[in-house]
Length: 244
Ligand code: SF4
Image (cartoon, rainbow, N blue to C red; front, side):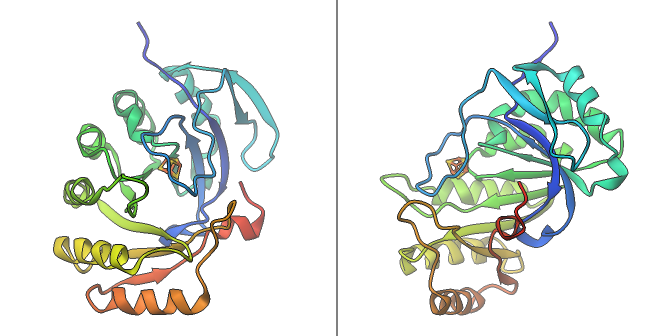
């Protein structure tokens, strides 16, 4: 039986986060997540139908049925002009929940010469292992502790697993972020490789979670630079641009 996968949305847009900010990507957003971050702005439930942008950048969408067969999904993605796009951004939710399905999908994309850019919360290393050879760039979050959830050891395993690929780290920070947590994240990264690019991403205000003050960002970047070589502060720029 043909493998199927549920999809949240497919569209073409401008990458708004991290070092690839400004590049044009095809976004394949997949549902479900294993975490519940307090600042999450993404619907993670599986919709009955998902929107697929008809022509890249047109913001006209067709409704497609979920779940979709992998070969049909490949056909939809191939209807976009790959030469316009830097890569296929696989995002979520947490896309590694669908590692088995991605194992079937990604070879069919790669053979059509599009790079694979994975956005992940960095907590499912055994799932990453399944698709690692198929991925070019990994945007890995380090989630600072929230509630009773603490991820240091799992993040370290994930980061070490990622090192055979291009990987950078993103840490979302808000005005109440604890310095102790930031120092722990910094030391974790430094212990793996101090050359790893680390992005401090000020949260986009949501509910009562506010972006850090300008002074906080300067202080935190300085603290990170005490042990890491490449530390940048980059907000979610697609929000300013009105992009999806
Ligand atoms: S990992 Fe991402 S999708 Fe999942 S809850 Fe956190 S912010 Fe939302």
